[in-house]
Image (cartoon, rainbow over all chains, first blue to last red; front, side, top):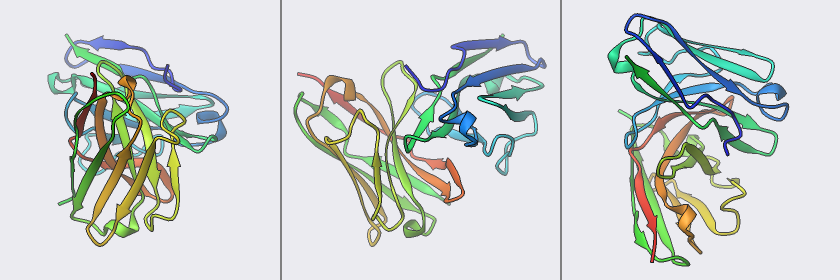
Length: 110
Length: 120
């Protein structure tokens, strides 16, 4: 059972917009810790997509955006492309001095 | 170019031990905190352990506390994870990851992972 809760799967057609939610608690997201997002193809190195709730590392297209409110956060992907098909994880920090992840969301591009 | 390359995984019996290594290049290793993160088959990512740049501070997930030990050799730009008293539930792909900065609890670079299988 992951500390942060994500939907197991989402899907969308090419060109569409999808969002992935991430729900935490008062000891992590709600405590003010930032939320970060990773794109992951199993067996490969996870890629940092969004850090500090809504910041994109260099090279990440602006089709990807993040937001945070209260004890939740979300990742939005616009102009969906076939290469966006991957697993997406949210991550934050907890007052228990541990890094915490969501269970991951599998994005399928129809 | 930043690179992190893990090694040391393998098949081990329950109760056994392994030492994982992560050799890094392309950045000033001693100035960055590092972590190990694992992914069990069919499961999500799970943070395992972290260590400060100097090696003086270490942190562990409750699931591995007392069994795993994280360490680093800054002269060899290498991160280690000693796995003892291994259990079936420790079976996973183990990644090393660099913490972006002291201002952010986020990992900006990851390795490709090394696989640990605990089975008799």
